[in-house]
Image 1 (cartoon, rainbow, N blue to C red):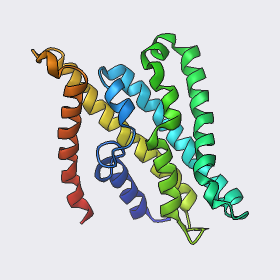
Image 2: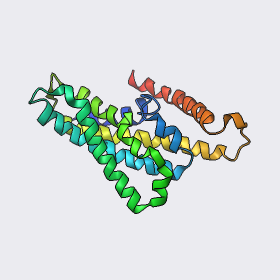
Image 3: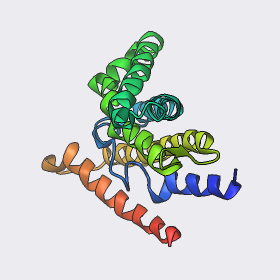
Length: 202
């Protein structure tokens, strides 16, 4: 395994192809939960866990179940089942440990099941680290690491967004721009700022 490959995956996953700000996946929770830093970071922690574990399990399912039996066409439905299982587990843990946080998440915690960021990374791992249905050397470790880095990129985006929105609560914002309209403006400007990292990929 190449250290340079790990570095490339880290920089790409966190900055250049940030799952929210560059790939535009998982925007529903990004806009809805990012009003305050604490719920935003808690949601990020849940997403990091689900993405990482899903990357691990989906690789194993694809490599040892779908490919040997020629059922690659079932990858989407099987990946969604894996993600749904982990989301259910996270939901039960959060509800037991912190009911207040569970109520703050509302409908958006179960929606991690269909969060396109989680499914997108699982599919991306298969596309990147399998060639002609054969796993490249070190692909399992690369897939798990890419899941972690994508989760860190999600966390970075949520942290930036929630910090900005918390500060704007102290400002005199026009009523027509409060909440979601202003959230989309902030997301757009932050995404444009992250386009600067694309220079590293050339």
